[in-house]
Image (tube, rainbow, N blue to C red; front, side, top):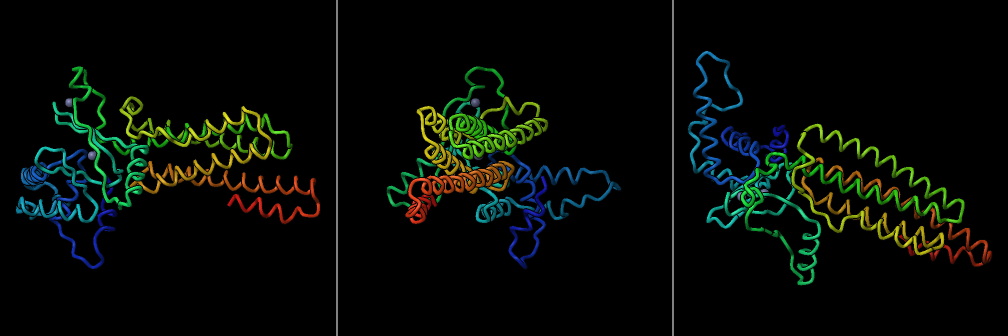
Length: 348
Ligand SMILES: [Zn+2]
Ligand SMILES: [Zn+2]
């Protein structure tokens, strides 16, 4: 993990480098999962023993400061607290009577499933739960700082005796995989929507726009699928690992509902308006969630996709305005301008 730049960005300007602290932070960032302060202290000890055990005359190890031996339990505890304050670590309480810590470097906020038999914890994220929590807080005029959601029980491996496909150590890959799956599903439903819209549109120019958008969705779909295949090469088991992102009300639902409305028989203007609503909803969805995530491949995927959806949205709005204008000119040449402006204004 390339963390040096990350650590430098967290250090306040002018503050001294502390080799002890850097060692503790580096060891901590290499761990996946949820560590107690004592787990971390043991790891620091191991690191130090390994360093001492190196044969004399061997190359000096420049990654480990030579005062590591003197790192006390209290220093580890203090550094953990410093990491929590600096946003490098998150403190989690699984009801065991002591805190655990997980790092937040390229690791999005999430919820936990906790197995009472093997004491393992599993991570997941759900946009539906997050929106619901936000809704509740807003309705109660409550400023939410942190929401904790935990599901306690028995994991599949403990229940069935079958070894589970581990999620350990690959959260970032899982996150990217799920972000891509959601973007691909949205792209597919967008493609279906625009193909259908192109078939039913009577206006020749509007049909061209829908065909163009269908072509663009097809091209983006190809790009996203290539990226997905690339990701799978990094981990042959990636496809079978458990779902991390649960997005039940994801943007693909918007396009699916839109395509259904097209089937009910709509005019050209309505078809464009439905497209605008779908693209706007999709753009908002990906931007909103993309901005929430910590820096990661998954975040990048969401934000890039949000940009693509915005480009589609702008194209559709331009087209809608032009259609309204052309139709008004045909109907009432005199008052057309003012009316057109009013109708166009309702869009922005
Ligand atoms: Zn278990
Ligand atoms: Zn966690």
